[in-house]
Amino acid sequence: MGTAVWALIAYIVTIVAWNGVLKRSIGEAMLVGFLVVCLFGGADAPDLVGTGLDVALSEEVVFAALAFVFMGYLLTRLGLIDEQVTLLNSVFGRLRGGSAYVSTSTAALLGGPSGSGSGIAASVGSVTIPWMIRSHWRPDLAASLVAGNAGLGISIPPSSSMFLLLGSAAVSPVLTADELFVASLVGGLWTVLYRFVVVFVWTRRYRIEAMRADDITPFRLALKQGFASMLVYVGIAIPVLMTLDVGVDFLESRVGAAATEDISIVVWIPVLTLLATLLVAARRLPRTPREYGVMLGDMAPRYAVIGATLFFAFAAAGSLGELGLVDQLTTMMNRLDAPLWVVASLVGILIVVVASPLTGTATIAAIGGVAFSALTAAGASPATAATAVLIFASTEGASPPGAAPIYIASGIAGVDPARTFVRLILWFVLPVLAIGVLVAVGALPLFA
Image (cartoon, rainbow, N blue to C red; front, side, top):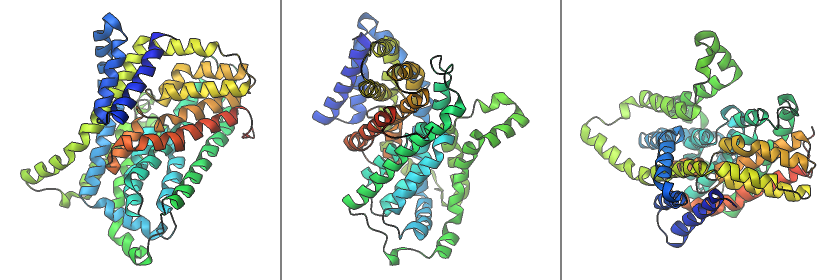
């Protein structure tokens, strides 16, 4: 194995040991892990530090995650979340585990249009995490479910990752978007079905009951009290709409095609939602500098962990890339020569490991084509191989320690991200990996 692969292994071991064994904060563990990666550069270690920091400073998800945390805090502080939860409970409160089922369904519906695990974690989590907590879910369970569902931004078509894979040199000559769409949709629905099973099991395992009748406000009263609070999610609807065909056509007709390429829902969702929140709750905002100081002081501790963790996660990813991680992993994959189920398992594990410090989209761009070639060479059909690759990459939202959705969801829930790591691996990463292998070998049919 090459230097970068060993650096990746050392990175993961360092974080697990620093946080899990030494019981230090996850933010501190990510900093130490980043420095360990840079040490593998030898005399070039200072340059690796600079490269990593430059990548982290230019990564929009770092800004977006901090903005999402502020958005969630503001919605809670100003009382808008309470009104929204009251309204949602009036509709779904009588269903046992209803908030979690709605959270999963919404993540699936937003999956293709958003194409972003971070976008799903933020937009869905900002509403459903407080709602789940209010309906007797533990905060760490609520954060785990939202982060675990974030991968639907890759596995549900038409995601940006799907088109990125279709555009690779290995895939484009043998597979079209029309041929892949149905297969990837069915593959994504297998992962959605599994997530509903998780909600069903958790609801009973953690004894989540339906809301008591006397805790449920009548719908008409809840709508009257909470309608205005729901208007803040116009900030979610507009960016999502602008990424759909109707929105793209509208923008192209008004301002040109170049403008559509600059829309990032990960950035614009928190920005527009914050503006909408300030407009809707203008009368509830602090009135004096002292009141603003108290509000910002209460919020500041949330950034100490989440900000440091995300920043150094992306810094480490940049340094690993500079060490040549992609090329070394590609060389390893090209050497695979085994039965399909073995190749699928190894390809899946490799993609999961790579997607942990990187994003799913970056992983597809780096080794998606090579993974596709390895699966087709072992006997998988092109559509099946591509679908399996997308399912494997969809674990990135739940893969500790570097997945941004974990920190976004944990920030909204107000919990230490490290409390979700083991649960995410056992309930989301490993099962979704298994689903990908079963799809690759044909045990879960794609009907395409």
